[in-house]
Amino acid sequence: MAKIRQTPMPPPMEYVFKQQGIELKKFKTAAAFEKEFKKFVATQHVLHLSTCKENTPRSTPLEYRTDGMNFFVLSEGGAKFENLKHNNKVSFSIAAPYNSLENYWGYKGVQAFGTAKVYSRRDTPKEFMAAFRKMKLGPVMKKMGMNTLPAEFNYRIIEIIPDRLKYGNPSEGIYWTHWQRKGE
Image (cartoon, rainbow, N blue to C red; front, side):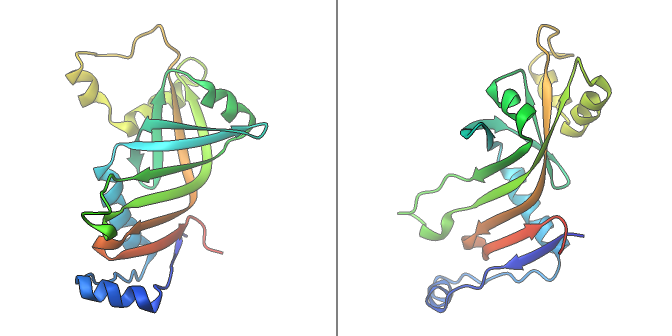
């Protein structure tokens, strides 16, 4: 069962938030936090996936879809797959654009750590199609005039299963909330 921990806000910041009219949210359950978190990720489209092989990190911006608290990425290739063969531990971040001069407390973002699974259209077609359905890509493909993915590429889907994440969205009252998939 997932658990959450909310970072206590330092008293000077509490004062500033009060002056700004920002009321802090207190989540009573992990499920309540997840509901709020899912609203944020539904408004974004790109995560930056970090992989590593032999002490050489790589970060790749990728469009994502979600199913529950898991993230899915469709890709036709790249060095990230070589890295994932050697190390399936990953991290990613998602950040909404903002201008600190217009709204200093307007930043919204997540930093996550977890495990990646790769499903190949050629090597694991059953798992690939199950993940493809979870991504709900049909409408996007239809809009592009495609009924199927081109056969020339061995498309792969990366499923990212976060173990833990940290989310902040101060203007909406969320000051660094930590989520962990398995409570300890």
